[in-house]
Length: 195
Image (cartoon, rainbow, N blue to C red; front, side, top):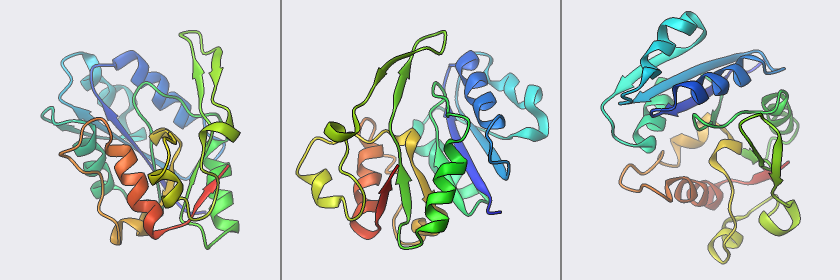
């Protein structure tokens, strides 16, 4: 069973970050390492290192933005696959298992992405992004991304780590569109599978 590194950049969202970690610990896929990078939070985020102990790998940096935090996570990761989740997001219980299974059965694809549900503070779904209107599909999707306004949420990606040997990680000079930039660069070199 291949290892998946789950990288969480965290900034000032202690309670949400706990929910994020719990959603990862409760995954049906179990060969996971959780890498939490505290991006200079000034709340109680630092307490998560002690609270979760060996269940997470904890790193702390001066506030430099999510891209730098994600890149440190990539550097420290030991997994065959990488997935990124923002500290106020949660994964469905079988998200990682399904994503890994798709890539294992479709070796010509290098990354997957999925739909997004928006939830309220009680974890009730309040919005579902419609797959037909919002996503470029599977295969070679770079042209569709370039010529459209498709939005693929960073927290839905699961990528073969080896892709980062050919594509640079997150651009730390970009703030708002760093995930779109990475997605475009990945899709220029590799095929995507839409779940």
